[in-house]
Image (cartoon, rainbow, N blue to C red; front, side):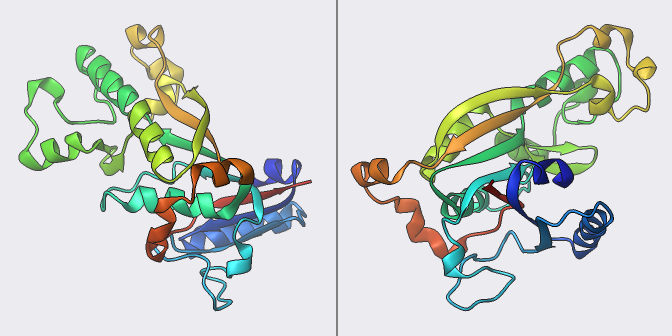
Length: 247
């Protein structure tokens, strides 16, 4: 979607951990003759904004230089419980006071709903925990308590709505809007045609992800609230995939 974003922002800076995906995106940008999009590699697990001007991490003068940031299904890797907080904190540090961060994350409520409906229809869905009356293993049970489910075989972090609100608040971001991003059963089940969707699922409420629009408080409000204590943890920041500057 870089070509669409390029129409609405003066500059789009996009990052990914995979050099192969970055190369593909760079090729697409070049083929479409887009001049205001930069795509490069940055590691989510590394510290951003260092004193040394190293491209992999960014220079300190890059902090607070963006108006808008997007994290689309980025905060989904299982692991260190503080990992996602560090990622979101990096977004906080990237946008200017009053800037916004748009996040799309898998909905835990939707995963439970999809799993239940597929089990009722005796249809193999994307999730396997508890299907057919089977009890989860001890490892699976521990993952479930953390919001981690195997989606098409890949362990993926899912979020309760209040859980993500709490995560945003911990790094100093305010929730401006929360909405569902619905998608088809065909897409959720990985089918090639709507005709393959079980009839009783076709009329069911659709699966969804959570979309959160977050805002960094403005400078005056930040002064009233005091400094963000989460910034003390800046030694473990990460990256975010797409940053924008308005026209």
